[in-house]
Image (cartoon, helix red, strand yellow):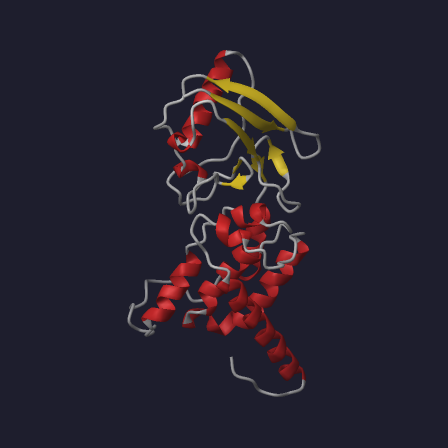
Length: 258
């Protein structure tokens, strides 16, 4: 396959970037998209040029590191597919492909196609955990959990934190990511003791990081490689309202149920 690539090159977050054109003349349709970039970088190194910087790790669709906007779509044209799982057979001989980093205020460019997604880490640090004594694993049947709740929690926990939802959202919103992280703990009894503090702290941190607001475009759900549903945003909003009502009740000396 012969391909023309236009790849975003940017030295760092404080410099201006631009697209650079590359010609690929012998691309195997069996290559993954990242393997194709590997071949390009090997070619550039042989020519004494600087390779294209891009994020990658597991290359198994698990870690979420492969953050690329391919022809205007986060992770490329295939639904529920990360860039590392995207194969070149999904493109045609002679195609022109534009490759960019995530575009969001909260994800500054580090170099070329790499962005700083540590804002997600800080949202998790604000409350995406439960406080329990450490030690040996507890008996699995100590706390009965219905299958419906367990399945729903697992659906939310499938989020790999790649940031495609932010990149696809016209507002650069992190609501789907934050909702998934809030929901998978709120649904389970282990997350109940801290649920009010958690949702308020994580939403406040999300807002302070500079992410945009959600206006229900639904692009986040479409771009998510794990198919996280926007229903979790509704669940998080409900948790947030309940947390604020509980705070008001405490201020008035009233007692409310979780």
